[in-house]
Length: 450
Image 1 (cartoon, rainbow, N blue to C red):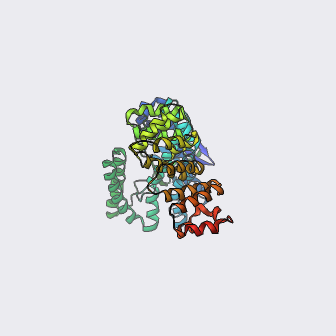
Image 2: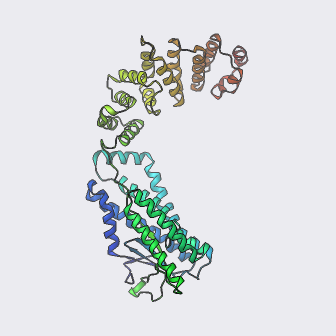
Image 3: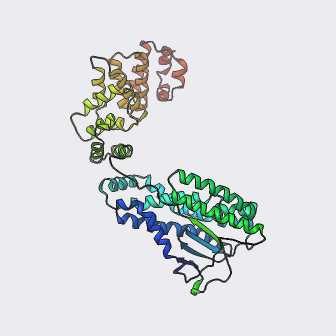
């Protein structure tokens, strides 16, 4: 590593060893089935992630008046300085934590936010359904790398960030022993979770810390993690600097989109419906075949204008009267203006098996803030002789009140009273009726309901 730097950033020399690119490329082979371009994107993101992490250390050292140099090598990256004995304990700990904090703040937070945005959803659907490389891929890689690699580097294993903090807090000898124990535990976890590289790397760190312990017992002062730093002008430092190693674990299994991952495909289909992207929802739902959720099939059919949508919704509510797994199907019904028609089909079934489903639809519409639609469906349910007409009428009144129709709400409270609804604590505390309680008619209504 004692060679001429390839470039400098803010006066900090940086050298990139060829083995760094080789190892990053080998890790990226996990994504080779998605295309060589994906592998190259992984390598580029690895370079950016490790460099930003190391620059976090370098800028912290610079702020404390210390020189540093960065080397990107096979294990990830290393920031080299003379801070042992030159900085206070608090400043040295700050330098150790600066790498992960910088990576999390500069790269993880913005990329994670982007992935969770509407833009991220659209980019992911485009990549997953077409296979075309777009910005979602590097954003996903940067989010993954800078979260999990930052977490890994905070483990109390020398010479990782957490190991250097441990050495500052408890002394070098105890830090070495802690490093051995944690590294062995980490290796066991890695080997039992299909992370072979991580396991071997943890054992490597455990072995080096163990060697230092043995050398210390014999009176030698050995630090297996000291390296020489590249300096500007190509002249290596003759003083050994304190190394801070950044570990870059291998990538997880490549994301898959196909019949082998039906849960993820279903999630994408639901998300497409939520965003009003009916063609994508139809394409994804069709790929699920008969295994698709009945509500997903029904909502997709309705969103795409399939005339069988009403029948599919009816069948779904009869088969699973507790309703869909989310409120997206309910939103699709409300947007399409079809909720009342579906409720009427359910209530009018001769076998009576649709009444529970219609009641569920009414409740879900209210939860989805579709208050007018919930009230209209509730009126249909009320007309179908539900088990508790008083409760149904009260719920219809609540929905009309939230929809802003106080006259309708008052009328349905009258019907609830006629059906025997008597619950003073409920009517006084129900937040949905706040506007009705402010109406001049409220004292008379309350008298009938209590």
